[in-house]
Length: 98
Image (tube, rainbow, N blue to C red; front, side, top):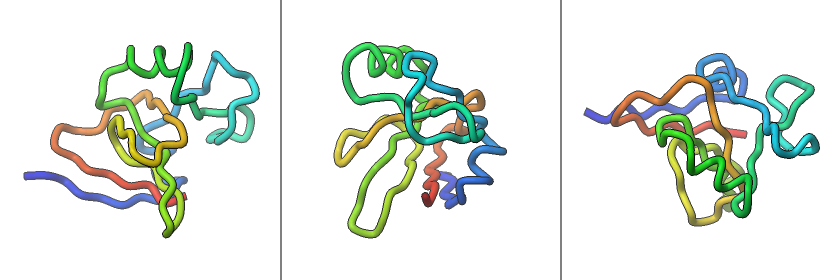
């Protein structure tokens, strides 16, 4: 059975603990007020994202209804990636409203 869940940013940060982007000190999307957590969709940053297990990858997606973080590695309308310390459980589909 697939778990489907929608979280707000605070619940996402508390539950999955995003890691800062150590490759870019000016990265956007600060989860702790200090360090940006968004990784780019190309180059060294994307290579780093791809080295992570899929259960720890989140995709920033822009839609007409707003921006969201989707669990997993998505390509359409992607604006970047967030990596987390804690994984998404198998068969989970989680959306974070930004």
